[in-house]
Image (cartoon, rainbow, N blue to C red; front, side, top):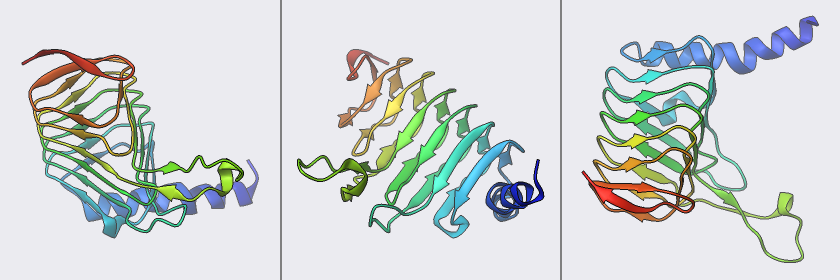
Length: 180
């Protein structure tokens, strides 16, 4: 690997992850976690586990400047996840299980006709996940989702909008399947 590529990797991946570890010594952060963004806009509760490889990005983008990430006590975030604030707030409660291959996205590109997607302004309603939530493998949570406490989301579901506390949902888009 060329020396410049190694230097970029250390600057962009290793140093931000180590700053995160120093700021939250009570959290378990995998050596293969790719963290980008502002540690000061990040809050990790006691006993949080961020497994890796995974990507956590607490950055602004598309004209949005409100990127924040908050993860409550004892929440487990599995491998191969993609958490992108993208200028919006993502809030995950305590005692949650976020399985592998889950994507949480805080904002989206606009889709107006006549302007290329890459130049569209972004809109960001963020994501809020209550306490004691289980997101199954492969779940995608879209901007504006509000997942109540005690919810179970079946594998490979897509969540948008509000999910009432204590429900079990699944599908694309996720629909109520039962309750806990």
